[in-house]
Image (cartoon, rainbow, N blue to C red):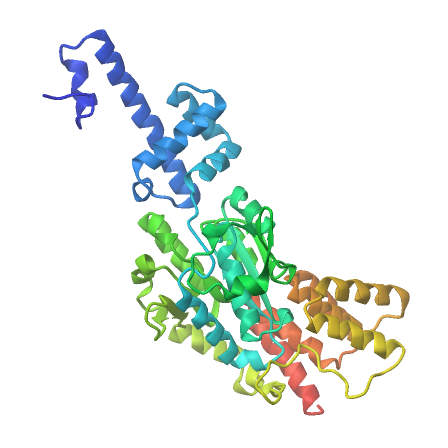
Length: 443
């Protein structure tokens, strides 16, 4: 016997001898099914979410919760409001997206991250590593990235982390950076002793870690937003593609390939790692890391070689040597003897930057430039600080000012080359490198 929960019930009950109450119930269910499909389709278009991956019951609970909050009794009325309001779309996303994360969730990817960065050729240069965590949820993953690099010995001024999520609610919690026991589920909690202090509200993360992460509201399926982020050396994108439709998965994979620098490292989740086998990524030789390196096509590699000749490549620029013990070289070299006057202020600000006290270093640099004549070395110093803070556009202006004042300022030319590379401007990067190389050779 067919009842109202039987598939096809809505199609047959109109033509069967039914009571008016049953007939009305049938009509209501048809409307509900149609309205919820419209809502589900809209969620898939906006954030790539395929409802079947979270379950109909979770989706319906989220819709019912929003209807209750708005005092709307009919799902048709809610669907109409939903389709006319981007604000309501955001609120429903908040209900649907339930982050499940904790610090150092799966240790192996973070171990690989530390090795990848500290062994990279760029580590020995004056290079700022750019890392993306997407989605970042309540912040445990990007903060784990920052703690990993700090524990590995990378100075705070040598890396920068963007953290992106579609939910403003979880981003607010991430920026607050106060966590309870549920966020500490890894076996080794030594990091909590080093980087957190206990308060009556939970464990609060130290400022030295918090200020290394820049939180942004955004969506991997919005091309303009992703393009605006620039290029990254490392991307964490774990346990999100499994909730996407196949079309959204392919779009996200193409985006991840595009935003990674050549040879860049991508960390994925276990259930979605199979999506990345192919001609664009090569698996890292590390069991249970679920990591991949970006490959270049032969045509892309040839084009890059044509734009950047061998003798102007990055390796041709001088590399600061590592001191005894293998500790990383500071961003700026310190003078052998303590200078006096203006040079003493410059040395002090440079030291503040090396120690990761970027806000104070920037304030002192700006104060100096306001009170004294323009100076290429001070514009360069402030440019490095701004780049370390993630303000690439501002850094670009400052390095250009330095080169305008001193066309022979090699360090600024090298930084301009790095910024051009990150932006995907290989021809511009090659030009800056050629200029720097000519100056080094006395040309």
